[in-house]
Amino acid sequence: FLLFFFFFKQKTAYEIYQCDWSSTCALPISPTGITTALKFLWNLVILDRDRLNAILNGMIDGVLFLNERGDILFANERARYFLGLGAETYLKIQNLHQAKNLDITTYLEETIENRYEALNKIKKVASLNKILGINIQKLHDPNHPLLGWMAIIRDVTSDWEMDRLRQEFIAKITHELHSPLTVISEGVALVFE
Image 1 (tube, one colour):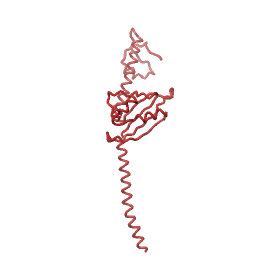
Image 2 (cartoon, rainbow, N blue to C red):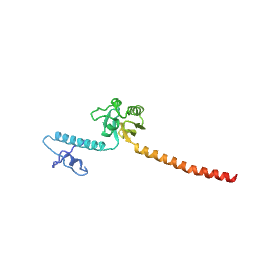
Image 3 (cartoon, rainbow, N blue to C red):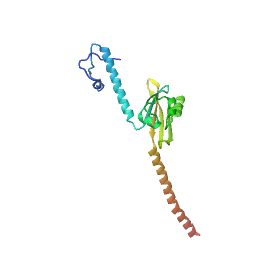
Image 4 (cartoon, rainbow, N blue to C red):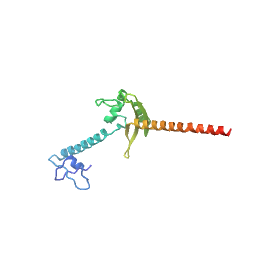
């Protein structure tokens, strides 16, 4: 890859990150240019990692990333909450059996073993008093046939409750309309007799 060492003005990693690269951007230069450039690039990687962590930990859904071998690379705070695992728990598929709330080990193993594109499950979790939707999807890259899998755990309790209320409402309305129609049709039958 190209490193741009021969620039004049010193900038921070964040300023370089904001550079549009269609124009000339100034990178820091020092007597040990390679070391400085590598430190600079490492700072860019750290900056991107921190941004990605902030985005994923700010999500309302639980998110787990697994590599192509099935090793868990990342689990955000919400995923740990839904699973019932503390922040100190080292995550491996084998450790997910220790989950206090939700054990998705069988779903992950099934998806990985069968190389499914996607797997969707709904599970009621009594300890959380919630209904959770679990979606596991294969991650693709044009240059790599399989990057791994992403598991998303979503609280669908309110959706299921709204659906239950809708069905209950329709059943009551149907019953209330059916009763008067039965009385009227029986009255009409009596009149014709």
